[in-house]
Image 1 (cartoon, rainbow, N blue to C red):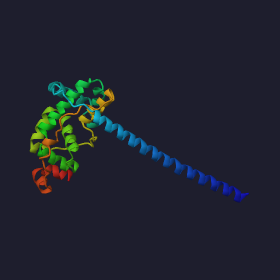
Image 2: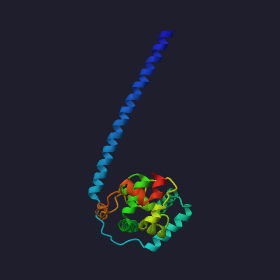
Image 3: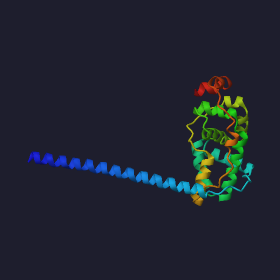
Amino acid sequence: MYYITLLSMGCIALFRIGQYIYQKRESKKYEEKNYLRQKEEYRKLLKEREVRTEARIYEEEKFWNWISTNRLKSKDSYKHMMGLIKDQLLTFSAQELILLDNLLNKYYKTYYNKNIVGATQIIFHTTDIHCVYLLMNYLLFKGEVIFKNTCLNEHLINKLEVQEDIAPVTLSDIIHEVYWIKNKQLIPKAKRQKEAIQTINPYDDDDLAALFPDLWLRYS
């Protein structure tokens, strides 16, 4: 009787192991199918994506007042500010989202420079364009004066200190996400910014250390 019980328990254990392996295999198949389906849907969306014809930008004074208000509400936290802004963007019209995105593209094009790339190299250890925009967004959320002056002044960049683990999400990312949520389509495609970026090459480490010694010591 004892051996029969052990045998029964062994059979049950083997059955459960087999069931677990089968479920895992089926789950993996489902995930792969789901991934392929989503990939195909995204390709379709890209093909159907409209070209942006709206060239106007969001009113700058209104934008900076909005940033200032949310900065105070979030107690200067990038993560909290992102949450507040996303909730508010859900009330924006499709046109307002496009105007706001146009304004950000203008700022990226105007204030993207080698010093910002160098600071990104030091702080995030990469020159990936999204990370450069992330640093620019961090400065942007500090207000108009800090954003514009720091982007253009290597001495202010040298004093820069990112005091929190900022979420790897930019305001542009949130705008595009909200546009999709509200309209079930991708935001119309804007003119690419990379043409102005490709000519900017990374600094060598020795040059970075010499140009931004304080920043280098903090993050290297």
